Picture 1 (cartoon, rainbow, N blue to C red):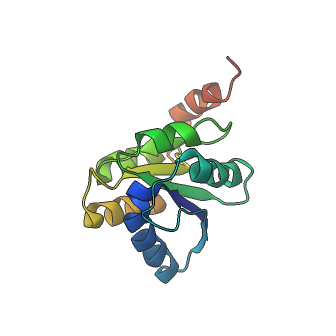
Picture 2 (cartoon, rainbow, N blue to C red):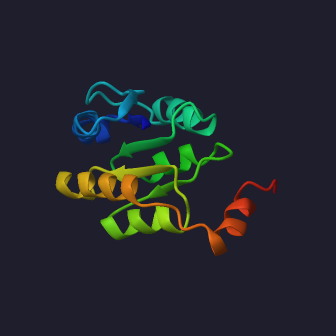
Picture 3 (cartoon, rainbow, N blue to C red):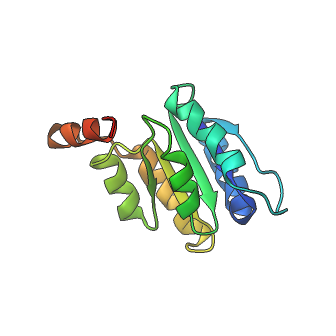
Length: 144
């Protein structure tokens, strides 16, 4: 699977670990940065990752920051992106099962590295349930 990956400085460490994890699992990872702990503005890195998910160039995307809040907000500005802020395995499972989340956001300051990897694995392996959830998802892309 082609997966876009991006973080700000506060999510850099986990981004690097997740990249290694995904690569070992055979995924094609497109890393949009950042590439250090030096302070940066998260939209500069999150937006390009979300754009390739929105256009279909990447099937999924993972973004990271200190809390993950701003990163999910930046990603969700793109039509067709459904970026869920995940804080445990169950939130990741439901993000896929009910919301067909094609991106997730993780907060490095909020969860352990082990939890982050478990969230990623759960999110990647959980199918979308469809059915009663489809009309709700269509409403997300309706103009307001």
